[in-house]
Amino acid sequence: MKGFRDMARDYLIDLEPVVIAVTGSGKRTTVIKLIEAMLENHFKTEATAGSVSDPAAAFLSLLQLPEGTDVYIFETDPQDEETAAELFQVLQPGFNVITGVEGAGDKNQTKGIISLAENLMKASASLILDGDDPLLDREWKADAVKAGFSDGCLFKIHSVEETGPDNSEFSIEGIRLRFQINSSELQHIKYAAYAVAVCVHLGLPAEAAAEKLESFSFSK
Image (cartoon, rainbow, N blue to C red; front, top):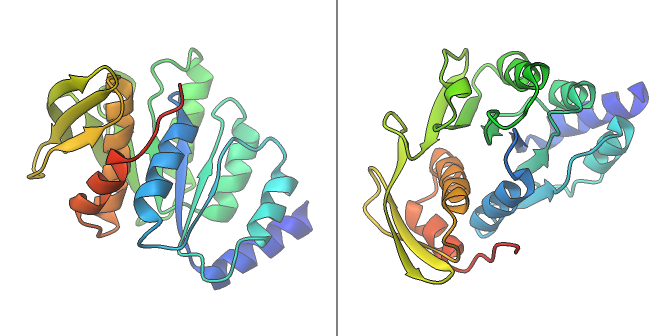
């Protein structure tokens, strides 16, 4: 496995993509698909949907990333801390989206998520956090940005309005437009806010994210 790991690390150094990790107790794959959809018209984006239990297979898939990849998004399962740590050591994410830890159900698992965020990211990395999860309300070594419904969130969701059985509109504080989403679930709205936060940090206009969100379909 060491050979695959070293080759993957060297290839990523040459490729220089922005690496985005998605971890936590929420629906990570949904968040990945949202970020990918919002970025695809602006960056050459590749994503690994689904957590990987075999580090060697993960490193092999990294070696298959196309040349010119601008953004790579991957998922880590907080229950498999050893594999997650292996991936973080090689990938050194520039962004880590933590979809909450309150429902993790295991204090060690929660500590593992926090340890990854604190110790195995780039020094200049940013965290996108569930701003409604009290377990994530702490001091962080990295730049931490909260998204959610609570006061204190930089990307604070407000003025949610159902416009149909499976449609809603909402606003994000500081962004002068209404977001339309094909869901009435508050959790889906929060996932969308995570993705918008990533887009804004990458320099994309909120209007571009809103346009993709309007056509995004959530799995039933």
